[in-house]
Image (tube, rainbow, N blue to C red; front, side, top):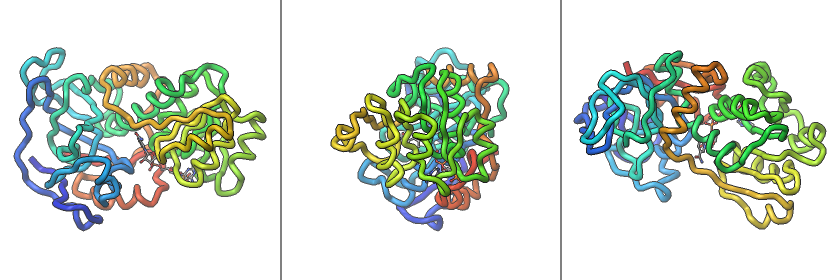
Length: 316
Ligand SMILES: NC(=O)c1ccc[n+]([C@@H]2O[C@H](COP(=O)([O-])OP(=O)(O)OC[C@H]3O[C@@H](n4cnc5c(N)ncnc54)[C@H](OP(=O)(O)O)[C@@H]3O)[C@@H](O)[C@H]2O)c1
């Protein structure tokens, strides 16, 4: 199969197309013929070697964790799928080697689900990783409830594009941050208030809307933004980080709860997301499509930090 691989950690020059053996599904696994994958920041973080102490990596390594495609074959014991079914998956495995920047990937059947009927492969490939991250952060950990105020950083990004409509669906009032150029996009996702974080102090602007602070802040931007976010949460509220690790002492000083989420594969939650897409509650993010052989360029664009929606890599 064709795959975009790296033979060692490095920059864009480390990525190259290669012909490698197609994986064979083990017992309990589905072999997916990938038609599209999408770019997430974790991919260049892995490529550059920033996460080598967190994840065991083996080379040659295929980057990528999002997949939309069709079932090509099933391993022993797999039921509920047939060859040709249109499926999607967040294909994270304990070892980083067999990713989705490729024509095929194998994945545990319980982490694979039918993709939304109304989406193209390109559109569907944008959702698994960021959709599950949003679901697990807002619902499983944040326990979002109707009437709450939620602050979502990077409203125009991949996570923001899913987290905003999901928080609205849950009945929350959403405050999002984005540069002014992205405000129409973020409002179109359902945000009630949008703060231009380059022009305003987002903590003060948030408190002008929710004077005691928000019930939940979603820490999708790390560093100083995350550190300052503790002050935007009301006492007893929660800060959910998917970027930097949490600071328990700081949380105690502010009287808030904090949690770090590392998204896990979950086929059941993908089925729920698919139902929300097919029912019209969720739409795919804005997308820019590129062929798989331009993956290095796509990662450099993502690394600049201002992609609106997501970049899709069409596998063909
Ligand atoms: N722990 C986990 O399981 C997990 C899962 C998924 C992602 N993540 C992490 O979460 C972070 C966000 O992921 P993502 O996929 O949403 O990234 P992304 O799509 O690449 O985010 C890009 C967006 O960030 C916005 N942005 C940049 N700087 C900002 C700032 N200072 N304040 C507010 N918005 C800002 C940009 O909007 P403007 O142009 O308007 O600035 C842009 O639209 C990444 O660090 C990623 O690695 C973690």
